[in-house]
Image 1 (cartoon, rainbow, N blue to C red):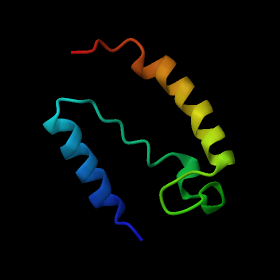
Image 2: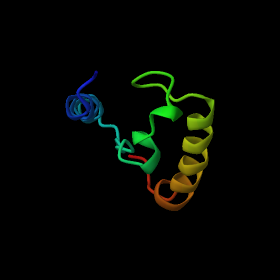
Image 3: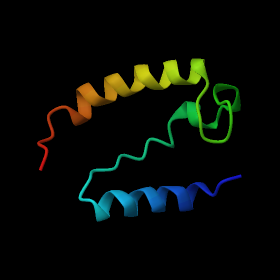
Length: 69
């Protein structure tokens, strides 16, 4: 099993080193539901559908208006 804390730290370091924004969405309610994943990292079809619906809303309310720099 992957160490979630280390994966998040690695992703944050990667993003920061390239001056990219990083949003950690790993604490969403469905991230702890194993039946929505095909393995430890990848969502299955139902999980991808739920994530996509959430992300569209998240993008439209939180990210869309943020200026890119």
